Amino acid sequence: MRYKVEYTSKAKKDLKKLPLDIAQNIVLSISSIKDDPYSYSKKIKGTKNHPLYTHRVGEYRVILDILDNRLLIIVVETGHRSKIYRKY
Image (tube, rainbow, N blue to C red; front, side):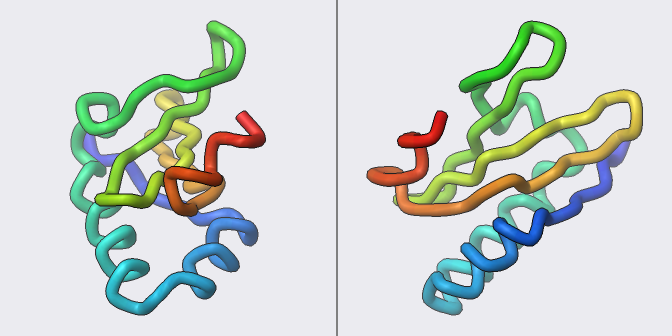
């Protein structure tokens, strides 16, 4: 099963604010987890039926929403590990 990846407008803005090499690493890392996103991410918040996940890329974190019924990974937000969890 190969998941498709979509980015929210917030995630796109976050990536544009980051240095180019870090943004490229994040995009490459996300595209590499398409086959099995659960083994590379950790549950952080949400209801039991619909949790959010975090994916680690060096000092940065990516907040993901994984939809199994549509085989879709939605990148909600990206940011430095010191600030990304404040909303969650």
